Image 1 (spheres, rainbow, N blue to C red):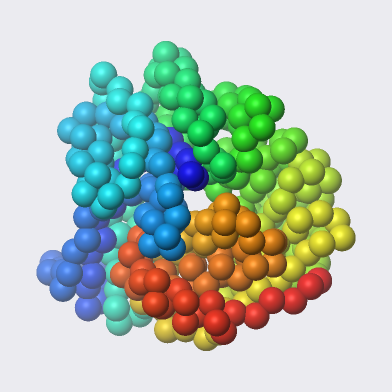
Image 2: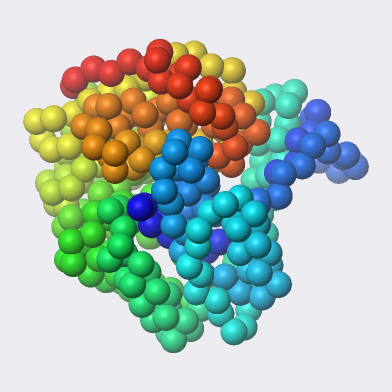
Length: 311
């Protein structure tokens, strides 16, 4: 079982529009409402790929109850930390079909107290004992701190959990380099972390090794249409690329990528094969309506054409 933690869960409303023009009234051609936040997208994609996810995270208020209901409707087992006060967030995704672009509006979400955070940490640790992998995904709620985040990651790693993190900003800075904690990051974020740019996949892999030297845990770097890199250690690095695809909605592709990676690792795949699965899942999502609503058939088709090479 893969524990997918979404500290700042949301309802994602995806509106499919012919085009988007500011200042005008729009009527969507289609709409998807789903339990959202990066960890929930990861869980949804893991299920598409035949894996066994368990969702965890913080929810509050009426929106929080809707998140729980929508996750249940999607068949996603969950253990939520339900707050007594506050209101979970809602996020809106506008898909402009004419430009193959998506505009995302994310609400800030809830504010947690020290007691709320302690309960959340206790809930996650209780479920982590039964999980083969633990993934912390997305932003954290207001009221939490990077130091507290680093502490829970270190605690989980210390008790033997295989921990992966996909986040950004100060939360990424807190997680990167922690002993035993693996990260999934994009090439721009990596350049900011190490303090210098890298032009080609080999140089990007070298930069990722700088993070690995601190954590001694795998680092995976996504590069958009250029594919992705898996750094297992200083000597074992791979680069995978999908075949050309027609992008419909890329929102959730990074989450689907992580799902493909973790699902393959849990099933015993080695690093290069897990990377191929990750790239194929991310690309399959980009061809779909987004939010990890892709098909296994698309995934398998892309997987067959995904290439891998050692760096």
